[in-house]
Every structure is written in C-alpha cells, then in structure tokens.
Length: 212
Image 1: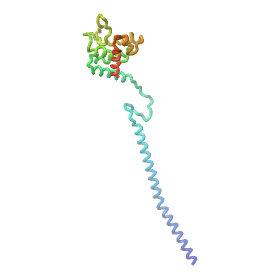
Image 2: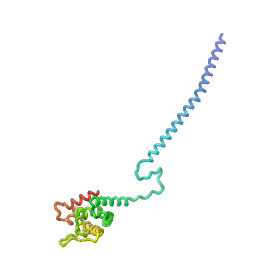
Image 3: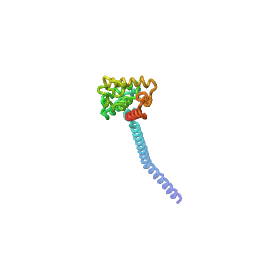
C-alpha cells in the first residue's frame, strides 16, 4: 500500500514538472518575441523623434539666411553699405515724389553729396522744403532751392540742380559744421537768424523727421 502511494506521488510530481517545463517552453518564446518587438518599436520611435527634432532646429525661420548643419570653412563676407545706401535713396525719392518736386530725379545725388561732405542725408531736402517748397518756389532758372546766397542785390543762381546740391552741401560743411554749427538750431542762428520763434529750425527738423 505504501509503495503504491509512493509511486502515485512520484507520478504526480513528475507530471507536474513536465507541465511546468511545457509551460516554460511555451511562454518563454512569446515573452521574448514581445520584448524584442517592444524594444524595436521604442528604438524606431526614438529615431523618428530625434530626426524630427533636428529638422525643426535646422529649419528655424531666419529670413534671407542659409542655415548649415556645420559651419563652412570660409564664411561669405556681407556688406550692409549697399542696402543702407539704397534705402536712403528710396526714402528721399519717395519723399520728393510725394511733393512732386523737381528734385525727384536727383535723389541719388542728394545721397552722394551728403556722404561726400559728411551731412545727414535728410538735411538738404529738409532745407529745400523749408526754403522753396522743394524747388517749386524759386527764382526762374536759378536752381536755387535752398535760399543759398540770398542778399539785397538778389539770389545766387546755379547752372543746374546738381551744381546747387554740391555747392550748398559744401557750404554747409565748410561754413557751418566745421565752424561748430552742428545742430539745426545752431545752423539756423547763422542761416536764418531772423526766423521768428525758431520757426525755420522747427520746420527743418520736422521735415527731417518725415524722412525717418
């Protein structure tokens, strides 16, 4: 009787072990497959995310600038002088056009003579606006839009607007700025000292502000 019970117990233990072994070999491959699939999915997701992050960074919206993943060996030289000069010409041109001024075709020369003599590019048009409504109220064929050289015997005349621009710009430099008259109000004290309540200077300053 004892032997039979012992045999049954051994059979039960053997069957239990075989069942566990079978379960182990059945579940283990499934577990490994699921784990490998999860790892592969996470790796793919991380790669895509990193790729998207890089694209967003490289495509930052810098208008007019090319973005490099690495800096080139030689950086291109960029000059702002042409852009600034062109902008000033356009500002002066549009200002003159808005008043239908005869000086409109000479906007480029306004900038050139201003740079030549170190003047604010707005000063010549502003004085012309104050003195002659931008050359629309001047002595016939005088080309003198700036009231330059006015005296009791008459007004100074130029042979062209180009000559007038250069002469006045040079005069402002040598007779005013170089002698310490460096603000509009200081220039007014010599240019038009009898202007009531500083109206001349206030007008010139206002016209200069219109070209900012």
